[in-house]
Amino acid sequence: MLRTPAEVIARASVLTRPEYEDVSPITDAPGFYAFRRYPPDTPLGSVITTDGRPAVRCYLAFIVLLPEAGSNISSVVMKAWYARRWIDGLPFGRADTPPPGHPDGPNPASSIILARTPKPLNLDSEEDLPGYIYDNTENRFFDEHGNEVTPLGMLEEMYQKHLRTLGTAFRVGWGMGTIAHKLRHHAVWKSQDGAMWILLTCYDVEVIEEKKGTLRNPLRLYKPRDFQRISDPKGERSHFFGFQTSRRSFVMNLAWVAAVYLLLYFKFPHTEFLRVIYHNTALSTAALVFAFLLADTVVPWLLIMTICGLSRRRDRSLVFTRKVRV
Image (cartoon, rainbow, N blue to C red):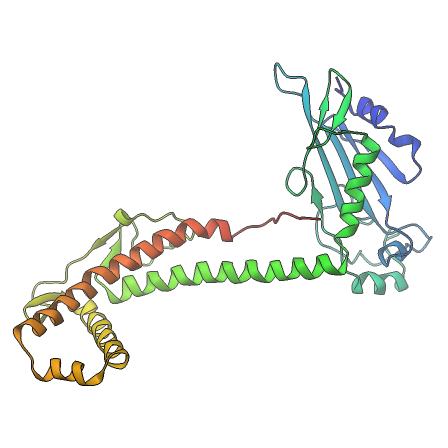
């Protein structure tokens, strides 16, 4: 069983390959990390420090997790990240400009190249790529298809997939996916905000356990029972052919009824529609009152259901990480 970083380094034979630089153990897990230069024929491969060292490299991590109790199978975690030499520790952060005079920063010519060059995406086998496993009994590594692989082959595969994120086709597809994600995010959030504004502004509805003026939880999962009707003060209710409604929703209900009848007027023969209006009967009056009743009950219900449905999509549209397919 691989229990220590030294054992994982020895099993991976990474020290025998000159392309892997600065191999170091990971202190909190049985694994190691190493750096590999970008190909010299790529823009990133030409970014060097003042003394000629590569200023940016690919950070590769290889971790063999301890198996669960009663199991001999370990999960293997691998990472391939874009690393800058002037950032200490793990290559987190977005600073592509080192402090002035930093010895590990790129020289002036390389700084111009770095500013104009697209950066590769960080890959993680736990999120973006199929995982690997290690059989402690057989001392062998396997991919997701059950094929035996070697640690050096696994590192090479991660490195090549990391480089493919620099390709033009991938970048175009990734950019289109980013635009689609942003549009989906704005559509979900703006639609729910708009439905909430119409419901609370134009209808006598309030949200239970939310006080006016307080900050509303943007990720709250709404349910129909979270909304309730509120009553107007005595003597402030409007009447429509005997049907009582609040002053707040009267204008909105009337607007919906007018919109429906205008739609009927333009979509159906005008003669028949006007004949019904001019030969007004009790039945047509009842139909008008029924339409007003539907507007007062169905529209708020539809708005509530829209708010509840979109609230369950808000957290899905607010994604900080995306899966990479290369």
